[in-house]
Image (tube, rainbow, N blue to C red):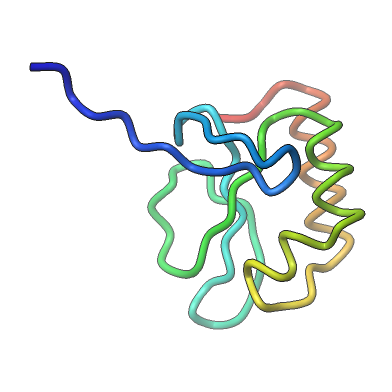
Length: 90
């Protein structure tokens, strides 16, 4: 029997994709926002495709902020942009 692959919804394009293909942005229990490439950090998570268009849509619509219920610092968006440009996601 084939193992079920966890699916998550992108906050940019709103498509459901495999969890491993996406980048997790997490609000930790201390209230900080960071990127979680392991997918194991404690806290509330939101996902975005490793795609600049999805990131732009998520930033413009503020969907990550609504999902995480916190203001997201510009440094987090900058780091996401850098990770996508160098392909260092995952």
